[in-house]
Image (cartoon, rainbow, N blue to C red):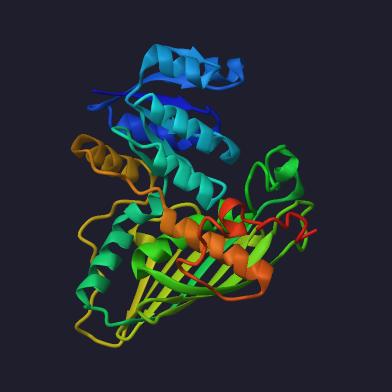
Length: 348
């Protein structure tokens, strides 16, 4: 039985992580909840039958010695908390964004030993995405040519009343990091390695430090070219992915999660069909099952570095006005340590 703790007892823990753990009750048990707000933690524990409550992560790690910790806290806390868990020999499953920079992400990876860390990227695990990846790998849909990746969401001014939102220091970035990262991660999971990005970004309507919209062109190693849009200014909200291959177009329209019904398939060949063998929605529940399989086998989970490198490159391209190639952002690059590259006033 995998002894699990949940750190941060807000909405994402309640809506996504507890149901995912309940679905794995045959091999995982929640032994503790942690939150700086004691009343919230107590209410969360009472609601979900969790036996122990803490307001301090380090005390919980010392007293409960969990095997796995779910980090559901604000982004600026992730790196320090993940390192603390890993040093106590607890595995980590961390909400997005896992870190505020490539430097923080590499610090987490460097703290691994027997215990390992992974990020929440649940959209990779729906049956539609897995089926599409398999068909592209097999070559049955032809060669990838063009893609569109759109995260058109809406967040009003009240959303940013939460003190850590909209700031470089605590949220790390705007919708490019905090919202669009899921669709971009799924795009990369389907198309493979990216090669180059060119981008623009701006603060058009929200009173924040970061951008509230960005747009990019991404070229992939396989030659495919994608457009990427990330927005929190879109009243009609939608998450949209489109993949045009030589023999088919595959589209996905959803908002925060999808099932097989959200995919659309168009082909020039009567011999090609879209017939996923099962219908597993994208969800924390789907990913956690795979994560725990990896835990049992001792397999290192994905922290999402490839996706974080694309996010970082998009910011660098937008701020500098120059194309950015994969691999060029190393420890000497100012964008390695922060997404604003040492220019926090760039969008003000």
